[in-house]
Image (cartoon, rainbow, N blue to C red; front, top):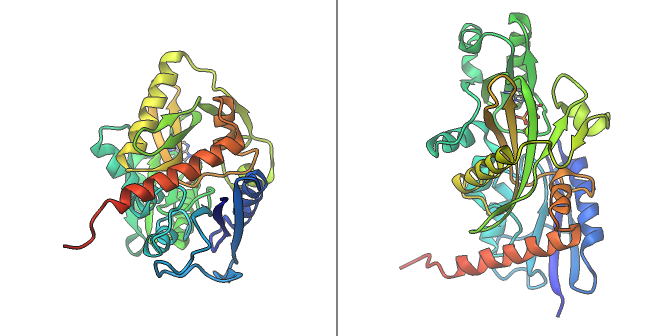
Length: 325
Ligand SMILES: Nc1ncnc2c1ncn2[C@@H]1O[C@H](COP(=O)(O)OP(=O)(O)O)[C@@H](O)[C@H]1O
Ligand SMILES: [Mg+2]
């Protein structure tokens, strides 16, 4: 019997197009010998094609497991995961809470700090109370200004002076109520892939060399000029440290399935900081998440098999929980 997999992709976020590309790679790699695939394309306005997944348990006997290939808002933030929980369907990746916490740059930092994991210093600000003086006094310049919940560098600026800071805050405020101001770390940018549920494992890390002043939207998706070192050229001691921190972060947010954990390494001190954790990282055949696994000995198709097994395992474990007296 083939496993019936529903691939849910597209979505309302700014990363709709990236999701289409990720989904295409995944759909191509799902072996027709093993899987019977159904596609659910969510349009930019949120309309499901051919029809939406219903929240009622048992409503979808033709689905054994869902593979959400959605990035960003309404896909990576716990919302669609909540729907799958209601429907009592197994799904690939992090659950509601881990997705929501990982998506929110402030919550993620708080959770990491509580677990004694290094994160970049920050201050947060509500958009109703934008305070340019407080923002400037926090770290001086340059600083990064970000909407708390978004991805793909959308709404993010590096501000070098007061005028840029004011513009940056106003831009970020268009994308979220909550804004994060961070000290700019001068140094290297590293990423690592994590896979697993209760016993997660970390891949070899990779280094990103943005072609722009930072890894912004153009650099990620349009220019194709950023360079990558896979594996990152680092002494074994630092590779071990990055893997340890990545797994620590993964556990701290109680992630499952997969995540890509991104780091900043300060040049002057050699200190590592967790920048963010992405619970549904880019998944095209040239995306870093699968490429880091490929380098570490897990090919694209095997990676997908494993993610599906992890989804089923997690659902089975949840089934052992009572939800009422
Ligand atoms: N504190 C920082 N210091 C230096 N560079 C940063 C900092 N924060 C972000 N960046 C740069 O901005 C990019 C996007 O920021 P990130 O927090 O990863 O947002 P997103 O969730 O949109 O990917 C990073 O990949 C990095 O190049
Ligand atoms: Mg990022």
